Image 1 (spheres, rainbow, N blue to C red):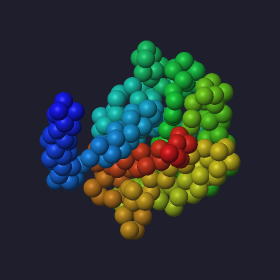
Image 2: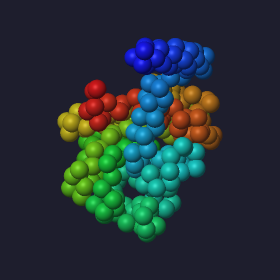
Image 3: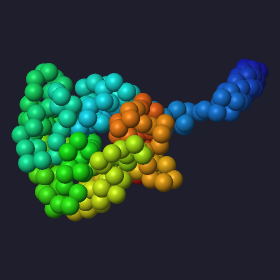
Amino acid sequence: MRFNRIVLFILTLSLISLPLCACRQASAAATGTDDRVTETADTKENFVDSLTFLGDSITAHMQQRAKVRPEQIWAAKNRYLNLDSRITYAKIVAPDTGEEETIATVAARLNPRYLVITLGIDYGVYYYRNKPDTFRHYYEKLLSSIEEASPDTVLILQSIFPVGRSSVAITNEMVRNANGIIREIAGARGLAFVDQTPVLADDAGFLRPEYCYSNDGIHLTASAYDAILTHLASYEQEITGDIT
């Protein structure tokens, strides 16, 4: 008799849990979300959260217009970072101290897990348009200094972004040529290259009008940075090597 009561109790609990489970599944279907989707979204958010960004004025403006923490941005005090002969002497504002220090010095101390590098629009694309070897030399000079200072940091080379129709001096042909060099450097060094051109450009190859923040056709809106970060997140498995 006691055994029968135990069996009856277990059956009753099972029957009660079924509608609760069904309700949870129905709710997920109705909202378009479930645990797996939430987990994927959290994973992407966490990956972007682990990135540090080094670059010129376009990277510097992420502090105001991108959904990242200010300390994720490494930029010069005047927001310009020229890709020239003094690139390894150029100083950025260290996020931990607020002091101006060389990139290698900051890298050695903070040892970022991932460093996304976006360089060439302030000085490089235009001035070295007929000197691809010079562009390559200074770009690699910077990479070598960072790798020596912080060998555990994973470098991610991001393409120079397309420019809008209103850009006067810089053309998208110059940008494409420079990006070809950066892609080659990434391949030779075994680094990830993230091409943002398909995300930011219109059918004619220009920066989409909705992504142009200013009349120069170069600087970006908040929505452009959203698109950039989303695209970066899609490279997580390739960059981290996590193919599970």
